[in-house]
Image (cartoon, rainbow, N blue to C red; front, side, top):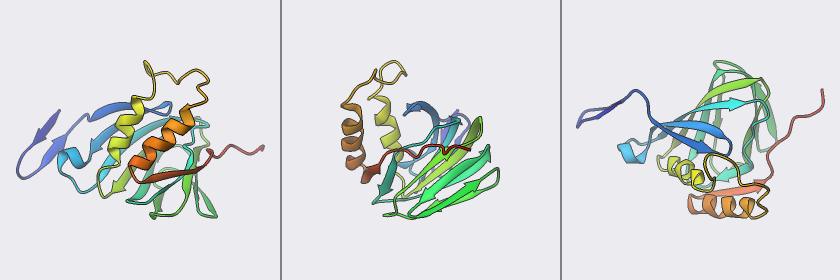
Length: 161
């Protein structure tokens, strides 16, 4: 349920999108007239986006559940519930879910990058990844460029224990 007015935009559910093998629920963004984008992410162990750099916005992750390893530049930090990672623009970053599941709130400022998440859904058919599509990484990189984001490396992987 969403109730926009001249004084507030109140939302219960949001818009659910499939992004790189995970579900995101978009809660706020440019379409709603907010100055930031907000998404709730439900993730499974091993999920990691490619190492990337935002050139237009800064990004923050608030960990609600689980254990997540964040990579920013040459720094690496593990956060649990209540942890916050604030990632400055023009710094390469990524994260890796280390627990069985994790739930994050992701915030981008200024708003607009949430539309990248909407458009990545179109690169997938029926919510499933393209079967061994060798062109997928290049298509994803081109889409990211349109949103001022540069993919600079592969996703981080778990190290042997």
